Image (tube, rainbow, N blue to C red):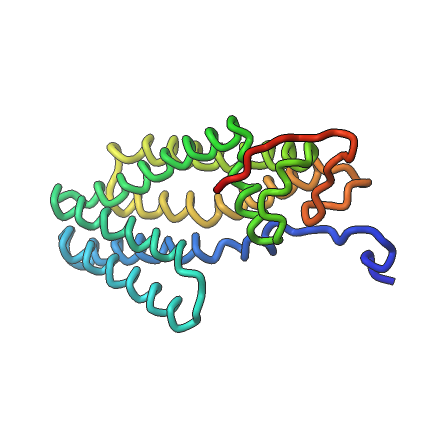
Length: 227
């Protein structure tokens, strides 16, 4: 007899819901292309930047053929183009990674603010995925769980910034590329695992789960829904 037949909610997997971080893995390809072209071209920022942009465009084209959601790929392409322009303009391959540092720093602020204003970003993302939209905000249990788990994401971005800033001005483009790759996909997977543990561990066993927000009938919670 399945858990659903028993009346018990099926145990969710955050990695399954978020798709396993494929976009983060794809985001490392332009970085590796940049570093490889940088080495092969004798540290030419123009060639390295061109290779990074071409690889990002190729990933976008594959996404179009596969009819995937392109928002993440478009953001990745935009970041790659801006990073490439900055590297060429400065004539220094290290500046290709500065955009990544700044984007991670911005992510810290966005995620932290979302938690403080009680719109934890992880809840917004998963609400759209599982179909609860913003109803989870009216469930104190889920609001608390999403807030706790969202802090893990904010900390993951902070970790990336600290590591990249520590090595950005003290090492080579090659080492920066390796550090960037190691703090991208592997850190994302660790973040998904830990935040998933925090999220589902914060939901009591007698709660039906994130797909079924519960609002007490005897308490009216007035929350302004977004237009």
